[in-house]
Length: 326
Image (cartoon, rainbow, N blue to C red; front, side, top):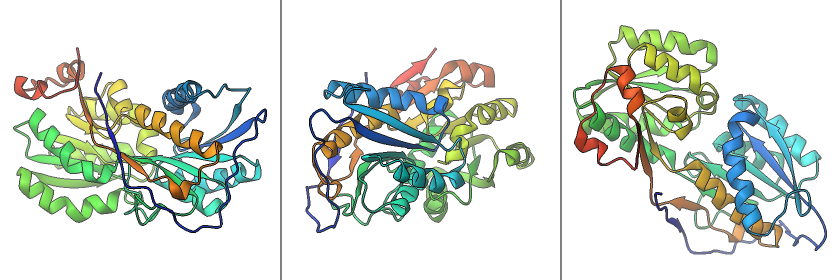
């Protein structure tokens, strides 16, 4: 098992009108879940969250109940779903993704929010400081924007001959802008030519991969986006059909048959989120809980996918992997 350490900034107290009261003994806490995914896609993360809560002494249906809302991969639905959780009178909101955190913040300044996001909460405008989040939001972040360069390095290591790399991006996603701002420097350092290919909705994916073929792309990196997670099986199938070795931002792509993942374990992030929820339900203020970020990441390589692609990955690169799927 890969060990992961979490680093949090020093605790800070910020003045805020938010009042958080400890859950009275015998009362059942209502935890609102705002997910960008479907119930099926969300299940692995919520299983990890529930298990961690149970280890902290929270028994479901006795000490807490879940009130869940699923956006089914449509970020535009998140504001309405967040508002419905507020109307349901939940005690805390657990939200995934940068758009989900932003939707929850717009829906309430009173109910505590615990976020789990692979994006940059500072660059995304959620908070101005990780150590001093302020207001009614805290949680964990994998700072996915900073990992894009590392994912390209991993892709280059797995496919040393690649020069032309397609980057699948949703231009309206909050994660896309920071990468685009740094892409020239990243490409220059790795000797790569990057071609940004856009897809805003699932119906544009086929055309996006056709464009990659016309551009003679030799490999693929998929940028972080809610819609891409929901369409992971279609994306993996299209990459396989076009024989494009790909690196992904979420482990679920590899589980769906994709080649490679580099990043933080989202299941572990949700276990950490349970610690935040526990503290808040016991009376802690979100403003007093610094946002955590992982200091250790994992590289997962799917050799079965490599064989389907006809790709021979250098043995030296495989030695770097934390997990190799045979």
